[in-house]
Image (cartoon, rainbow, N blue to C red):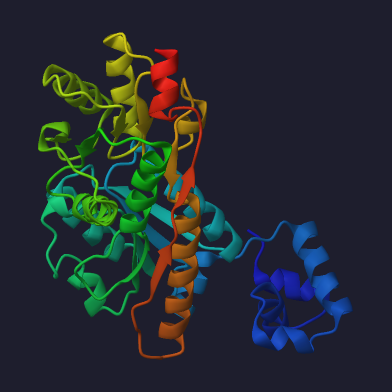
Length: 352
């Protein structure tokens, strides 16, 4: 195995000089470019790779971040993970990915495993509050001074957070339908135990109150499971249709639910958007390619993932500089993405 001593000997410089160059330390700016290039050429020639384990023992930093998700199969998590991975690559950190699978026991074991791996920080991706996570859920990390950033929602713990302004998102979605002329609007609310549900519904109620728009209780259904799904979107839309209350538009909790709703409407012989407009939330990749392409609210999920890494890196640097660790909150503004599942009710009537 090629060692740093071999590189130093071949380059004609000290081991310290090689270390400073390879670690891009602050002192590297005082080393002539010619020397830096010679060391890098020798590294390539000898095929030298740094011993990160030994380096971690010396620096007391593992250069690894824990990434804990509530369900790795959920498209919401997938998009955030893309942003996290890209940012980690740029900063030179390695992720250790753990999937809680919507289970409190798995969540607790994941935290213990990550502590054993000596992570430098943790990114918790949309850890749903239906896991009954209390203020002490991440206490083992906080007590050890390990920075934590949550993505998608604020946790009840002294952690930094990156999240969407959900109220603004649902307000702009409902405003879009209202501006088109819809007044008879059906709603599929999110799971009762998700904090997002309350925040999104608050946005709907705020706009409805300001616009004097009546929210008909008979046109409101709620997801019964712990999370959204295509199947529940389908079944809840069927329930709305069975109630025989006329509606010209349907606002779904998220894109996955909207996909199920479109399928149920089509199954009942109703064309989208000609006979019923549908709008989702999240803007997962499939939304742009669905048939028809879905009008939705973009959360910029990949951006949230990227921002979470930036916040965590800064927090880790603060810890290294022995600065007081303070929580940072970054809000991402949602954006309406109009595609082909919404139109005016006048057009619907003409095309029906």
